[in-house]
Picture (tube, rainbow, N blue to C red):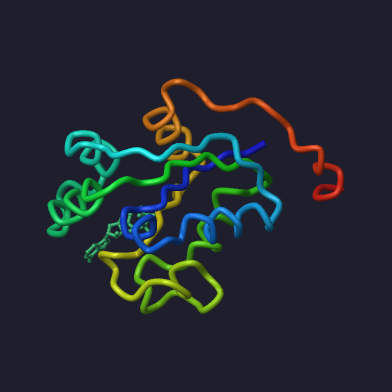
Length: 148
Ligand SMILES: Nc1ncnc2c1ncn2[C@@H]1O[C@H](COP(=O)(O)OP(=O)(O)OP(=O)(O)O)[C@@H](O)[C@H]1O
């Protein structure tokens, strides 16, 4: 099945949204395969956001990601990359629909609470970067109640 990398950013952790965010992915029917609370350093944050290194907001983005612990997760399920992005909402919370995580809980683009991989290929790279130790191998017993 497909996997995606989801990170609750430092503002999401500080604001007490960990449980709410995990709950949304769980209730949808996706399966949690990796989970840890970690503080990353500058070089790690720069690696994660390497594609954005030329952007004017890059330094501020890195500073934001290292400002406190983040929750790194791997979620598994059919079309989880695309559906995960839908659950998260548009990058700029001012354009995120109500009902999405960013639409419900964020205001500023530079404090948008959560990250989700934007493609299956990037998910693979991000999971390898954040979980070099590997992820849990298990299958939920609810599988046949979620997939036909
Ligand atoms: N104009 C901006 N000003 C400040 N921060 C920004 C801006 N644009 C993007 N960011 C930050 O950089 C992150 C990565 O930007 P990107 O364009 O990859 O959006 P995204 O894929 O929706 O976000 P993410 O990769 O965090 O899921 C955004 O989530 C946001 O935190």
